Image (cartoon, rainbow over all chains, first blue to last red; front, side):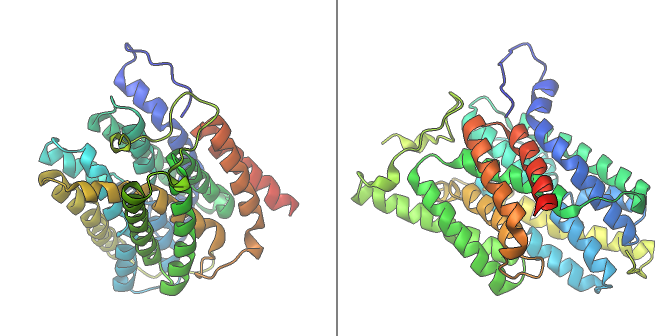
Length: 262
Length: 114
């Protein structure tokens, strides 16, 4: 986050915009690249806008573009999309405790525009800022949706006139997730689970040859984290793994959960 | 960009509509279920480890796994070095914007140099 001076008079649209801004800006080059690729795959500009709004997933849109260029059948693209998007179930499950008490309509609208990146931003805000509300989280989603869609449409219009090195711009999201990992670290156990997750992710991605590996490895490594923490807290409360990791650079504590007080 | 897709607009639209449903279902159903009933504490304790596991998996996929799903270090040296730099920047500055910008610049420069 940019160093925020809490200003009670700042309007919500502006404070949420500044929270969403790093994400919005990294969406610009990636969205442009995605629009260019969809254009090359035969998608017209209106459809590129629609797919950005209704699927709103960088990974999915890049996959659509690449599968269309190899003329994959409709059913296999949809099936691949399903496996790719299955991980959203994890996002929804871990955010749901912050969304209790919202209306049915709100949950529906919130779910439509939730993706990896705005989930990452919102999860961090919910975990560190007690005043962060579902409504503000939805605004972050919609800001990122706006930047993503507009970038895609521009990319589609400019078409192949724009040469973008995809591996380079994609690293913006990798860096975003790396930042989020660092923000999640609150004790040695988290680092340990991160290492387990890394090994399992490689193993299951190579094994399944699909992004289903992401879902499997995440489920297993998070469960190991849960089981290990439970075991250590009950049996070995003095374990080195439970040592807190201090964070320089800011007074803002790393992600803290209420359940930490024991 | 030589490959040409022969689908027409209606087929593309059908793909978008079907894609919406397969993307929406996993987004919505857990939120719907887990905000309605009383969530057991162990479930929340488990979900607490989802972000670090998922983000690590996503990063590992970008940095260590090739598009054809093979473990690949040799072709990813710029990304690996840039990841270390981003990690350090994130740790010491705790700024998302700075982490992303430094990451982009370093992966770009490293890709040119290496």
